[in-house]
Image (cartoon, rainbow, N blue to C red; front, side):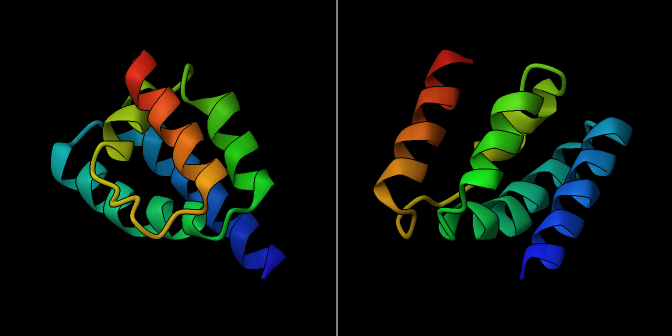
Length: 85
């Protein structure tokens, strides 16, 4: 699982570095970002914390996530990022 997570994070960063296309960001947020945050993995939270200022389009992608299944700490973190941006 760790290798998969790390590969997803590298892929997400690569996509963020290459595009601000709304359709791509919508699918990124509603897909891999949402799936990763649903796990509650602190590495994912740390990744987002470090990258959202570098890639403002990360916040845009996060706007498409459904947070109903997020653990409480993931949801609070995501809501904080979305509120601040």
